[in-house]
Length: 155
Image 1 (tube, rainbow, N blue to C red):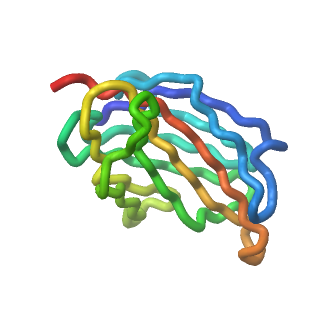
Image 2 (cartoon, rainbow, N blue to C red):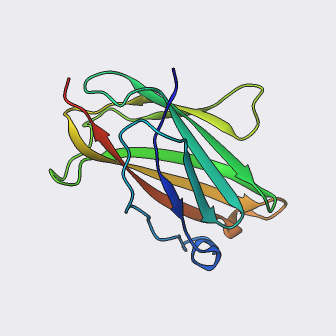
């Protein structure tokens, strides 16, 4: 059964729009335990983001979730990165890097796997989405940075 990350966050359109080198502020005042409604984020610039856990969050396993990104203003997603970070201990997941792959036959949908939590407790998933207006050159890319708090339960 798919479980939702459980966060609703909104970032202003003006804060999220910009050219290369400009980025939207991070949002991280919500919490997620892996249950509840899907994560719905509207980071401005006409993007709507939803994420739903496939497996997780849990300690010591290959956690995964599906990330759906809709563009209302013709933006093309150029790259997505996800970094698990445990702020209270100031560490990530070591050398384990999440893998972001497009889902075949599903435009705007990516599977994020290899999300590894080394211990239980409060974590942040730092998601960066690089996008560009359709038809624009690479110098007009915009970065959208989102911080999704996740509580990883003890085993």
